[in-house]
Length: 312
Image 1: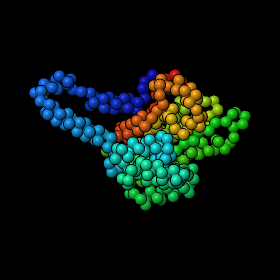
Image 2: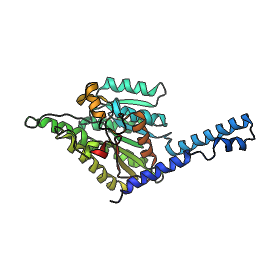
Image 3: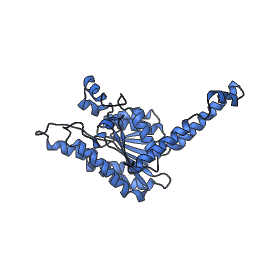
Image 4: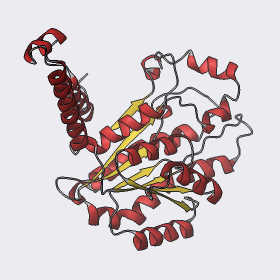
């Protein structure tokens, strides 16, 4: 079966980075080039390091760019916010709990004025409008929108309540669409041919497989988000706005604690991950920056699951 073009683009991008990192000379060759002069060798290494730093800054640097991350006060959203800030972006984190949002923003900001908190319920039309007005009044551009806020609840068949369907579809599917619709003018205003605006939706490996038979509404909500993202990518292609999806597997977050609250439960989950560990900051942060840096990647749904889907 032929590979998806977006997957091929991701592989080529990774190969570019690896080729740039690969040493050009072994230690002996490097020593001969410096005439065995330790000071010259150190200066050369410092120069190479500066060159590498410049290379990565040109690829992944986000200085002067702005981002909004929903569900940014904890878990994957907080990890992505941390990565965006580390790359130079100014970030607004959105969370329903005002105190948690302020606390997370203060932690991520570190007194630098680069992270701000906005309390909003992403399932509320009034709150989304207030969010839009706040952002429009605070900044004249929006480069990156990360729709991360989500919910997962289970219940047995025969007693599965309608409100779980309503809640999960509202927050996992409808909210990303409504937020994108509200913030689209800001994104379109910012987008440029050489630097498109970026929408990154956080889906789930659950959108590819069936693991928990009691997740009757969560799985469909994530499958639908994946497909919605591709629809929007096509819709926005003339607006210079790209839409991509990361589909995480198991990450040690509050959501995981909901269905694996103890170490025994986590050990059971871990047996299903070929990588032998849960996902962390470097994984989600690194992939997020790679996607945002890539102006040739659009409409992709990329699993980040430690190999979980290989056997599911």
